[in-house]
Image 1: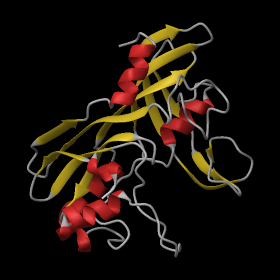
Image 2 (image 1 turned 180 degrees about the vertical axis):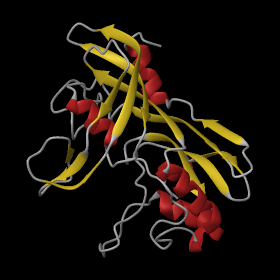
Image 3 (image 1 turned 45 degrees about the vertical axis):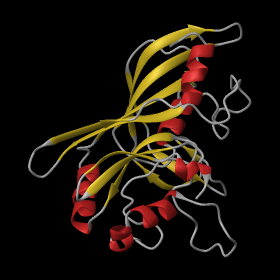
Length: 241
């Protein structure tokens, strides 16, 4: 077991599902077509920890119990379905936008007002990057993100904004692409922030902070994941704790 998988925390669980904290740097699952030995993934950990998930999901062999995902360098809260019935139930909630997901992000620039970013996202031709405006894009899908400024900061070299982010859809790289599209990329984002200052961060400042939804019996579930030490340290160093 790797150091990363040792840092996975089970925050809450019931018979049908578990809610965990995924550390930054941990890949969700491997790539089926690769034959070389790959790094340990969250899927590997799930198979060992929750053996009942071996038949759960759309592709249980590669993604056991995984209903939604986080980028490799994004930390935070994630739900694992332990039964196919709950997998289908939670998947439907996501499709109907009935799951409230809240993130924290540190963005470049000064953002003063709440806003909704409603821009379709597609995969740029010949790249792993996503975009809202590239000329040739594949798999273009509707994407909506609400952002709310928590605190503004001006350093010697730039302005920054700590944000509460509520994605209404769940596209790959959605928050990162949407913030970059309005000129406020996530601090430390190697793919979308170019050569902007990282303030000592080794990954992007994006954390899935909470997950909230209703069970079929109408009972409401809300689970939160504490901001990791590296992000807390960045805020402390920048005096915005």
